[in-house]
Image 1 (cartoon, rainbow, N blue to C red):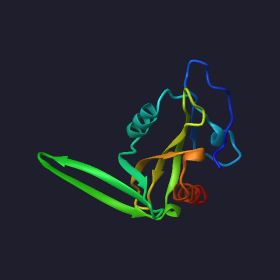
Image 2 (image 1 turned 45 degrees about the horizontal axis):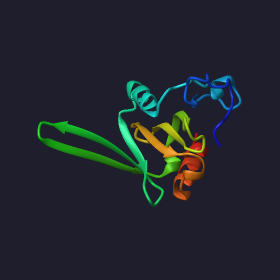
Image 3 (image 1 turned 30 degrees about the vertical axis):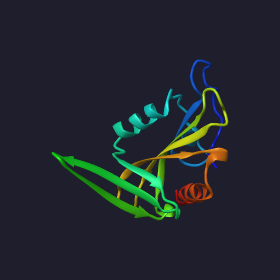
Image 4 (image 1 turned 90 degrees about the vertical axis):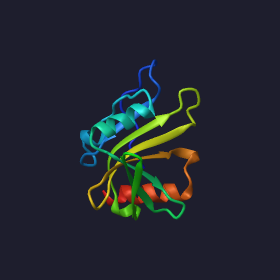
Length: 142
């Protein structure tokens, strides 16, 4: 389960939290920053070197993809990872501005091969069983 808490979000901001990985039980594990949108969180991760995309496949594995474009040629490289092989470095948790039940997470994950990827998943009631199991396995592996 992700840590929830910290200072309340300013009323003008959509409720968004960013948790930076740190030693469990320390202030570093509970650091929260307010972000306006999921796109802002993804842009911050991209700027921080998370240059791959990831998603959870129907079988519960995590697919990490790198998209390279060279002229008219488009090449996609994919890596299939068991979720317990991934480490979550950064977590952003979002609640909908108009509907607090509309929840999601943007995760900065690292594969065993060192690829850094952005993984966007639902949070709360909208998360599928496969997605929940995969995220739990990632959390256990940290």
